[in-house]
Length: 315
Ligand code: SF4
Image 1 (tube, rainbow, N blue to C red):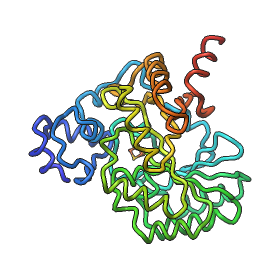
Image 2: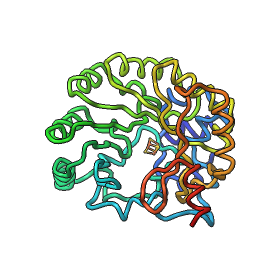
Image 3: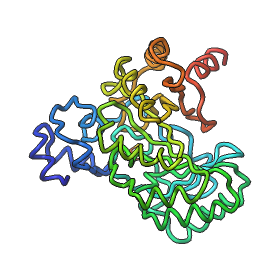
């Protein structure tokens, strides 16, 4: 959906807000994802549409919220652990989530690695000795099948496990084509990590896309972000986690929101997050309980929020 249609359909937006927000972080609105949502508080609209609050700096904004830059040996590559390498295949996404911690991240000049950067990135990962490579972005499913498969084939020679971290099955489920699924299935140990935050996102086409992946034997896990005004409610989290399990998706992580400039309106305190997660633990089975984690701003990686608290108290 383009700007003129969005401004007509969502009367609380205006041209100036759109342009100022878009200059900071792109705006892209898949029609099917938004469905018939019309209330500004709808979780899909709250996370997809620009908001005046994202234009204002907040005192606790961090320039590098998860400490990626100190762990980036070359453009488009992040390595925080010896056994894993993260590759940012593109900055493109089907939808630009307004809370995204990468909204201020600049791995390279353009939207995609240059041919030279692409080669160096793959060579680095293939010779790194890592056991897992994480294909991320942006959204790694925003690039073509051909480009994705060629990257996987290069990496596969030395890396036993490949993870694809993509929100496309949720925001643009038609991307999960039979050709994509078949190509992934043929290429062996590939894990798919999707990203749904709210049960409203698990529409029939989304559930069908997840089913295609699972039916092909690809393990599918979910990473949600705990977001103020979106899913900071134990009943919503319960419904999300149980629906995921019913659709054979493991609710792997619940992320504490990272403090990127522009996403302050989505943040909540770790105390509140822990209280919600503990309430969730009382309501769901172990199979439906995600680990509540925070990605440390010092670049050391993810830590359960309860441990991060204990560490902060003892230091
Ligand atoms: S799809 Fe992922 S990378 Fe893209 S904006 Fe959303 S959260 Fe960020």
